[in-house]
Image 1: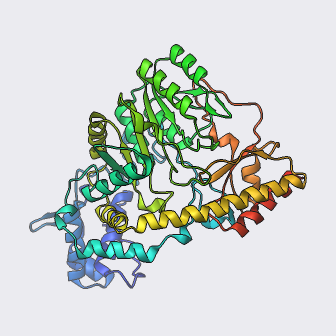
Image 2: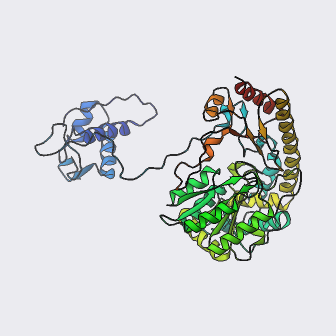
Image 3: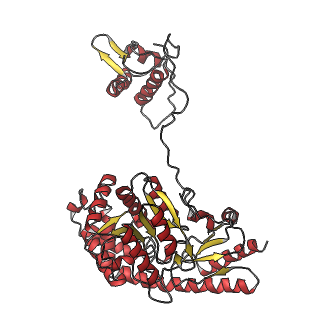
Length: 487
């Protein structure tokens, strides 16, 4: 056996491990061929001036790992069956490929994720004020869970969510949204909910309709499961019923994805009349409705309309929402309400993806709700966000009086405003990022691969969230946007 290149320069690692590493590396590189007999432990120890037991420990480790074989009275040799090529290539034996392996699949490309620390001014449309959450109060709920923990709940089970949380959510939905449900499925946020719905009900080539401007992660989930997207026209009152009817006649649409309250991203709320017309059309054509009620809680000028799911005699609405806007996205509490057979199908898919929920977090949120902390926090934040809502409105109005050619319609609620800068916004996101400002521009709300795409030639809107930063930061950020618009 040729000498090993051993450098004992890692003081935190045992010498026998360093010897094993050097020997293993030589085998992998082909410096020691399969079947080659090694020098005895005594000779090797003498060569490297080591204790014989150190060498024996290294050799026995490699035997256990399968690199070496031990032979009685004849010592150690490299395992014959290793797929290792010698550094001196034998005839007819190809060398190991040096190029990275190319997978014969279409790899998913993750979207860029905003790092909140990278921006001095953050206009993310769904970002809550994380500094105002009552962490100490919630910590008491976490402590309560551990002080009164039923350890049986930590085992596998409760795919649909712990019963304590499901009861609290059900009571909350009935009180706050007039939504009476028999069962629900707790998910790790709304994105898991959307993906579960897609996996359960979308087959390759199925048509899914959605508002032209919409929530990109939802449409990506549909497309990833084989859906073909159909854009439906919007106007100042929301989704156009006549266009929906036209597309239902033209395509065998299976599902319709909607954000009827504070439409994402335009903030428009569908009127009761349009909701009824859309529901009747979907019932007539056998279309399921996915109602994404992502920020129902925050309303400032009037009470919000009850969800479409609250008046669903045919059971065609799959309703989903989340606590990410009320608490924080890291809590991973979303939920789906639907007909029992739909919940059963979604639960089966969830079990394939995830055998168990975050029981501790769910129990803590349930206790937080039961003790009233959830409702107190919600009331505080609604008042808090209303102040920021009014401040953004006042600042935008002031900029208008100073000559900035912006237009917007003040929404009834939500966490953002849809503002027409009357200027090309295709590159504004990148430009403002360089100035420490995060915002969302109109182009990112269109889906590139729709079967029927309704992209306009010009993009002039931005979505400006007001909930996640102070009034002072919001005003300073708007001035930076104003300066860009006036250039």
